[in-house]
Structure formats: C-alpha cells, structure tokens
Amino acid sequence: MYHKIDGSEYRRIFVVGDIHGCYKKLMDALDRVQFERSVDLLVSVGDLADRGPQNIECYELINANWFRAARGNHEQMAIDVLAGGEADSWMANGGRWFFSLDDSKKSQVEQLIKQAEQLPLVIEITTEHGKYVIAHADYPSDEYVYGKAINQHLVVWNRKRLSAAMKGESEEITGADKFIFGHTPLVKPLLFKNQLYIDTGAVFGNRLTVIQIQ
Image 1 (cartoon, rainbow, N blue to C red):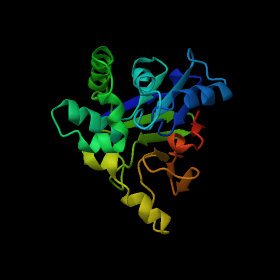
Image 2: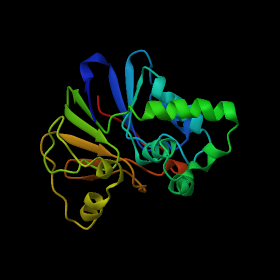
Image 3: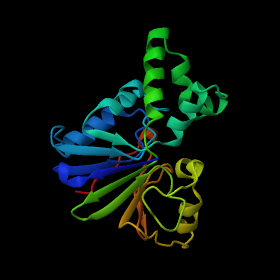
C-alpha cells in the first residue's frame, strides 16, 4: 500500500496531476521544465488513462525508470473489471476505449493494468525541503504514519476533505510537511493548510499541472 522514495537519489523531482491519456500534454510539460530522464523523477497522483486520446502510452509510463505513480480510482476500476467485476462504471467514466481495442492491443493493455495493481496507494518522498506524501484523492486520517492501515477505497475516491476545505473547514494532516492529491478537477491548483490539490482537468482542455518539489 505504501512506497518510500529517497529524494537524494534524484537531481529534481516533479509531481503531475491526473494525466487521463493526455500523453502529448505531459511530454510538452516535461519539455518546458527541461526534464532529464537520467537524473530527474516524475511522480503521478494517479489516473493515467481514460477519457483522453493516448491511453496506452500513458499506461506504458509504468515501466519508465524515471516515473512513479500512485494508484488512482481509474486504475482501480480497470483492475476490478479485469478481476471479473462489472464494466459499467469504468465504461461510463472514460474506459470505453479499452473495449474497442483489437485483441493484441487489448492483451498488451491487460498486462499493463495487472502491473497497475502493484502501484502503491501512498507514496512518501523525503526531500531536502521536507517530507511529501502523494496519494490520489485523500489520506483518510488526520495523522500520517508510514505503513498505517487506512481505508483503501477512500484513498482513491474520497472528496469529503476537499469539500469541507472549500467551505472553509480545513485541518492539517500531521506526520508530513505536505500532502499532494489529484482526483477532483479544479480550475487551478488549490492549497488548504498542508494539502495541495493539483488535478486541473487537463483532459477537459485545461493545463496539465506539473509542480517541482525538489
């Protein structure tokens, strides 16, 4: 469920919001920051595919040595369907592309989705600027502890913390300096206490947010 990254192993570290198949937007964003794959690291908040035009390319990022990702609810929907679950929810939320693939492409993507099942739900990154925690939707506790048992469904789906914060009811999560989440499309990144939300709806025509944390 948890994965730890030592920031000292990389020159620079960036975190990207929900990509949703927008592979070209991602590559353009990395070009803008002159990302170097041999020394830099990109960490995703999850939701690599669905809705966008280049879903396979985005799933293939899982195998890039300069890339890490937390598991999002869209990966979870795909994982659940491959495990025999109903496809309706995934199809209604942008997963229809998968079912129109030919057999060889579908087989390739099925393997990638099985790899996505191994993605952590929570990524902890220790940097020269402090401890960052990356998860898709929320860290469903008011105190972060590495390895702590938490509700896995809430990690990838919960919007209650953000909804409360947008009403002026925000509280710090202790145990780390900053938490970075995606999941909910926003006009621009929003910071509430020590929680930063960076899904800016790239797949809906907006900018893909990439922030540098080291």
